[in-house]
Image 1 (spheres, protein in one colour):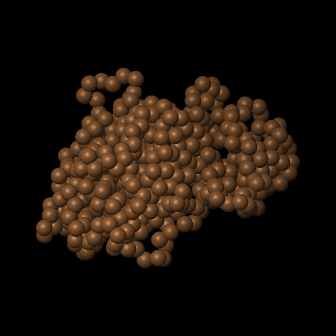
Image 2: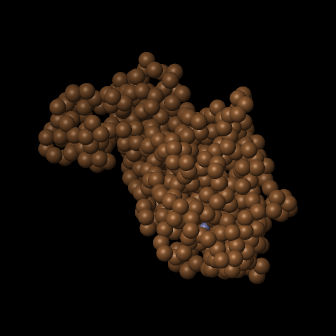
Length: 495
Ligand code: BES
Ligand code: ZN
Ligand code: ZN
């Protein structure tokens, strides 16, 4: 999809469709609403007064052959009350419009922004909304739908800021393409995405965007004594990998922070010997979503060039119940030296992250973010609305949550009281890999990770319920969401 700025008067632009959005209160017919009303010889006002256009958020009204406009269709998207409007609404409006038009065979459209949203921030949000909405999970379909959007033009933006605007469009494109890069990985079936194949895809991406990469193979993983990762991997015939990506800024001040991004990449989670029920098990191909999140974020950072070095560490393995698989009750020695009693082999994400976090620290990371499809319990707590965000110290978590709010990704702070730590004490080892079975499953999982992050400022994102949606939304196809990537990018750029 081509995206470009359009400066000609929009009423005379020949396109398949002209898109804009209407607010509650547009019956006053001023600003852009008034301009369209006049171009259409007074016909917009009658649609508002008849009640056909109510401006309810994301309500779509499609008008064919709008008189007075050169476009074939006029799509009006409801935008609610003007006072509450934010960039995140603009993202959804642009996305919902694209998906509506795409399913109706539109190839070229013009997106007309409103008074009040004419600067670079708005342009970036529209571009992000469009590209993320354009993503389809149809790679393995032989009967792909033909309909494709070829071009979207952005109209109404302030030409006085043109240099800035083109930069914002590029910025938006990098972020959304990186989000879609991660979504592509998350969609891959596990027979097309083993740990080895994930590492190969990471290598190809790193080469393309100019990131450093090192892939640790089984021999290296053993040398480094990553016992927690090895314990999970030993049940599979597919060997594990640890993917290490590096972004190095041109200049770094001495003592500057080094950001570590650790992502869980279980390319398929059967549960191991503590095997999962068959129902919905096919979904466990997306148990590498945290790893994909970090690869997507790194792809974007390679272009956007934060001031601080960033290292991504993605431990990748299958969790299988093979003849050599670890068994409940086994004790593993993690890379850090801590001993872990494996109560449930299905709590494998925290095991591989334990070694990922330790390795990040040995590489010199001073600040850590991890992302993982870690627990079913986070869905009980927050449904598919908010990412569960944990972290210590609290100020570091708050700084991260400020980025989430800035980019419009919903995340909710979860508690880390000491009482939860008691629940992962083991009778025979330093810690056990599950809680006491008395609730708080997402929190005890986070506490397990904290045992390895220790005093390093650390944020843990449990994306188990938000990384994938079973039902599409007007602005987003069903399937992988690419959640948290935008926040991580924003956070790295502000560090
Ligand atoms: N990968 C799962 C968590 C998950 C569940 C992700 C649903 C996406 C959707 C994780 O490895 C797991 O199985 N966790 C267990 C932990 C339990 C055994 C302590 C869980 O949440 O049930
Ligand atoms: Zn599991
Ligand atoms: Zn898992």
